[in-house]
Image (cartoon, rainbow, N blue to C red; front, side):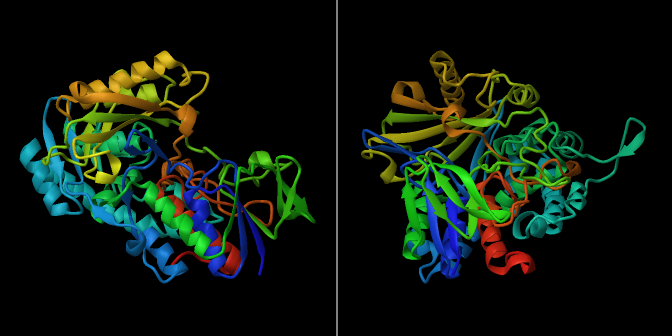
Length: 495
């Protein structure tokens, strides 16, 4: 039985902790805040309850697998999953609207054909077929296996873009924007695809064509809501950890990773207390916690592939509304920017977009509101990160941008201002950066650091490590770290 210290109680870290405890190890989680869940937070006021992190679950099989592997009670016995149907409603700049059914390629094709005109649905269906090929080619190395030592082979894009004659010579789309312009060839379909990339923190102008995996994953495996809010999933994972005898120490900030005989040997806490361990799992960025270079020559390094520098973040507005939620209301609506290119240039150029793409979440969940005569709404947009270019602690900037999101949301929610009781804002200053999922292509610039490191005994887990950001991806990172510790160098990936 090994002693394992886990830094942070985020979702990936807890997924690793539960699996390691089941394998017979003694696991202690050190979390500097007062609670678990990382980005899976919750805000409550006056009987209204809001998620402050991800609002929907995609690829739930990742979390079902965790519960199967760590206990007798399956995921659905610990939380209630509700399939969201329609999966999303899209409002485009010209006023066109389309609602896409959940996990039905044929239904999506039909809906797009009806709303956007002849040929639109067919083109999207053909695009999803190519995205499926990219998924089949890259699923194992990007989600289910440790990052290959010869990771350079993942620099090749698995998306089978058709060859087309452009500027008198054959070319293939290599970026999201090129796929949108050359293959979809319809402004609203282009906005749909580019909106997916931006929502995951990717610049559609530069992100590789393999980002087609993101809409494919959602539209194939569906969108799910956890009754009571997504924070309930974090609670269920935390309780599974407790049931497996994982120990949590809250209010415990790790200031240094202790080394002995050339390997990680524990953690030092603020105040000087040292907790010895045989392995250390870092659910937070670990480079500043070691006294030397953490990466080998040729290793994938943090933030590789963020072409313009700073990682983007999420701007969120929580709305308390008077009046009942209409029966016809859709759980998720996306109000698209009239100029996706200008939006991306602003987000990844250190500016605030004048007309952002806004996602509106309005769950039909009595646990999110004080009574049936009120409604809780969440608005969000991908924005430039907090830093010298944009100071998101500035009150006037925060409120001005919140008003911008509310104005955009009024396109999808009638009478929103007349119903508004109050609102709260959350910015990248509080929530931090938005790590994107790992993607093949782009010369490997969209990969994340491997879960194992140059320092023996130190492992990385969560959105800043392989396979990157997103709830499904951090769940897989937990499985990979547990496999590497339990099985060692022989581990070849999750089954």
